[in-house]
Length: 343
Image (tube, rainbow, N blue to C red; front, side, top):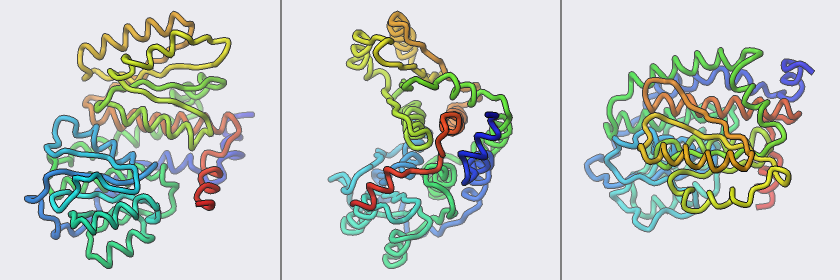
């Protein structure tokens, strides 16, 4: 069956077009104005982003995005409770696309009790009700997306808020370049033959394992894994350097390709510490000796921020194609919906 026919058959919600139009999410987010006058930046001593799934990825991207620039301790919280240190000197960014994520609502209520400074990011739901009742600034997201497909509107709304509060350097140029990048790559990846589709085709029949680097590209590994899970209905695993060389490398000592099919995706970047680059090289040598295939993935964009956007966008398209060529609908999340109903 031709690719276009597979897409028509297995993508009734037309996530293909959502992916292609990703740049529009950035434009919407960056043009949105939110009244942040109640936030006293002089009191801020640390920042906590609280959210789950697709709503947490934007927070993790912020962490990698401003690896060398953010001057505040920053944590991504994926739980019902905030860290014990959260107080009136903490800026809490509560992120829930639906506005009803129970873990995030719990953490938001705790932030109110702790008298934290709070900003909400959501389409509505309970979160918007709580924000309105407590006069909390709220960035409104566009409705109609699956949360994981709303990453760009989520991330760039968060970015706009930190930019407006002057907690990070001016981001106008980076945003303009990101819009251009998503337009270009959207056109490229929507063609019948493209790099994202080729990557997906090369992984059929294998469990993908991603290796990235803590603080630098860890969000790319996290995103790839989550998108393989949700879009492709496929197990996937992720670890990061240099930590994995202190434990996971030993798993390859007992690896036998006739027992399990694995392909390794190395997420590379030119800004890595020289010793980390050596770790990639040596560890890959060790893995190749087991006859496992190693695929190097790298962006050629001119700065680290754009490279993060580029690689995440690749993960979105590759896992989308991986779903349809394996006859799965990339939109549906039946197990998650079942779990939520039981809870």
